[in-house]
Structures are given as structure tokens and as C-alpha cells.
Length: 189
Image (cartoon, rainbow, N blue to C red; front, side, top):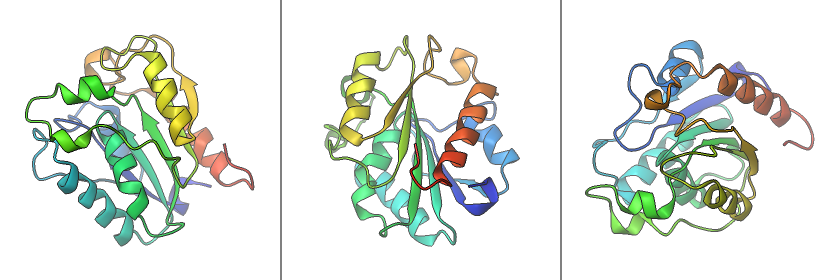
């Protein structure tokens, strides 16, 4: 599968992905990528955030690949049961916050945690960091297992955001390209 075969939906986390963040850079480079915007990036509201993702998936004209970061990951997991069947063909999930870290966000919707534990209805990769300040690696591994995601050990790379030095994140772009290629095969990931 190639990028022009799919609609790529970028789902940022709390406070959005700034101008130097890898998600913003990917949006400018990938013609079929678009950001799922929220009305209020500072207040994570489960129903509002998931509804935006569900609406974007439903409106997509091509098969959808989701690229979620931080709080965007559990937003995808909350929304997944409501996607049209077979519309989402893959999920590239990057450094979700642990339930404890997410619950500590100011003005966090208390219904956002706990995260669903059901397997996702599409192939997915969960990229995790060994020193993410918002999620111990073992917690990320537990989420990947519950969701049926392939766990990718990115090493000691922080939260894979601008603050950890991952504006461009070329390794992520290569991993995403590999993921898309796998989705085009009979038995993905």
C-alpha cells in the first residue's frame, strides 16, 4: 500500500502537535494526510474527541490509516468500535500516555480512562519509548497486548515529540513506510 492509496488521518494528543512536531511535518509532506482537529486542544473530552475521529473516518473517501500520538492513541481506541466496518485498514500508534499520566492532565475528562482493552479491529503498530516520561515501557507493552498491536521498541527517545528532539523523526517516517507496505500484503504486520 502506498500513501496515495489511503487517507491518512493524523490524530494529535493534548495541546495539539506544534509546527515543528513530526505529525505537522508529515501533514505537509504527505498529500493524502490531514489532521483531525479538536475544538479545544487543552481540554480532552472523550465524547467530543472521539466524535471528531469517527466523523473524519466516516467522511474519508479511501481506506483510512490512522496516525495517532499521545492522547490521540486512546482517542482512537475509544472511537474504534464506532468506525464503519473495514474502513480503517491500519493504525500507527505512537507513545500513548499511561492511564495514570493521562488522568493527571488538567481538566481531563474523567471518562477518558480507563482505556478500552478490546483488540482493535484493524492491524496496528504501537511505537513505545524506553524512557517516555508519560508511559513506562511495560505499560505500553500491556496496551499493545490488549489492543492486538505489534509493539515497536523505539529505544530511549522520550515522548517522541518536539521536546524530546523529534521534530523530523526520520526513523518514524521509515517505520511508517514499512507499515504501509505491510498493509498491502495478504497478512499485514
